[in-house]
Length: 166
Image 1 (cartoon, rainbow, N blue to C red):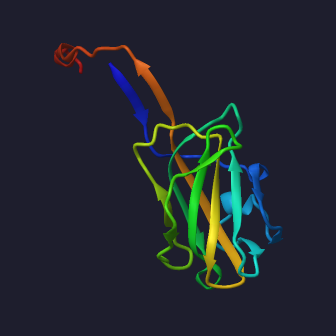
Image 2 (cartoon, one colour):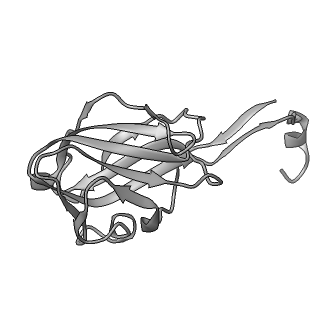
Image 3 (cartoon, rainbow, N blue to C red):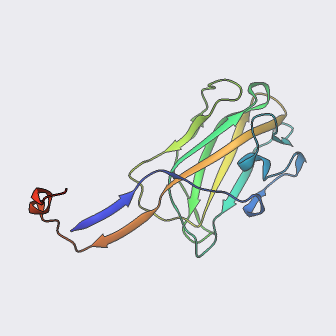
């Protein structure tokens, strides 16, 4: 008699659901979700703030529990905040301004984590605000979500465990 939530399923993301406030200079959005560490997507932001938006779609909202990314150290953002939107239009901050502590090339660093999140969002936006260089390279971007949120009116009878064959 409560919520059953299955946590942290890694989502399969589609490059066609990504938009950015600046043009992609090299690579593709799909590379961030499918390729190994030898490929990447690169933007030339000239030190200006920019954002990356991922839209799950109105009928595929997700309860985001974790966002992690792998960057090239010399061309990584060093500050950012993450916003999320229930309707794909109005965004709310889900992180404060964060400084990325760099785990190393070809290694994932956590940008956001909230394993108890039960708010289903249509999209999220990463606002990059500080940079190590004038271009940004993202090798990989992974998103995890709670995959089930339902109230089940079910009681389990512990006596069933005593049955033969269990």
